[in-house]
Length: 339
Ligand code: DAH
Image (cartoon, rainbow, N blue to C red; front, side, top):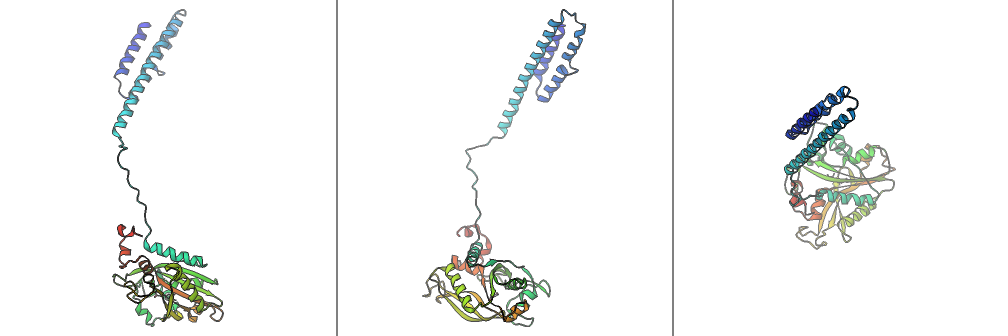
């Protein structure tokens, strides 16, 4: 019996020694210590051992088992360490390498200008709304008092999708959408993209942005328009900014005007920036035409309103003294980072 146990142990130790993976080690464990393993077989044969020898043999078996288990455990630890070391060697991290710089994005000058305009009007109790960029002819022209044969339709070279649907040429159509909702009073601004069939140059682009404004309520007068827009100009361009209203024509407002602000560079004296004028035009405005109110279901005898519209890029160019519109669309990070 002893010889048998010695043989099992010797054999096990040699196998373990030459074993190089934990899987093989496990196979060896099963073949010796498992249910049908060799050592287990010796235990089962105990019934053939004389009763008085059994304790002695039992102890021998246990010692053999313990030794095999210990050697196996050592082998396992050795293999696991080797695996870990190999992995550490193959996954070297050089902590002394300089870290990648995290570049934080930057708001576009258009966005900065838009948010500034929005915050001024929100401060005056206006709501910011949006309208569709693909628009019906009705909202872009017809409902704004621009019938099919109106010359103003020629002025705005339009991208038509079909005879009835187009890319909006102005944000003024959002006025109509708001009025049609039937909720009064209205005090809203509507920023958004507009499209015109223009060549791209320093002052034109086939796609740009406008900010529309509309107020409809009882007793709204031209004085409200002037007061509101003058306050807006002071907040946007500085406290000392003065405004001037020049009569103009828009089909959807009557009377209509264009508003100029004193040049914030020279204060109105005239400089290169304002081309010697002292004044810079920034928006169109007027009292909402009674026809426009009527077409959207508002009684012009009871309600009046004023509207205005400005080019967002123009505001951004002025505020940041950029002299070429195209710079706003090229998205050159070296340019954008300056604002
Ligand atoms: N929609 C006009 C344009 O694109 C700008 C404008 C002028 C809007 C007068 C208005 C307004 O609301 O009252 O040229």
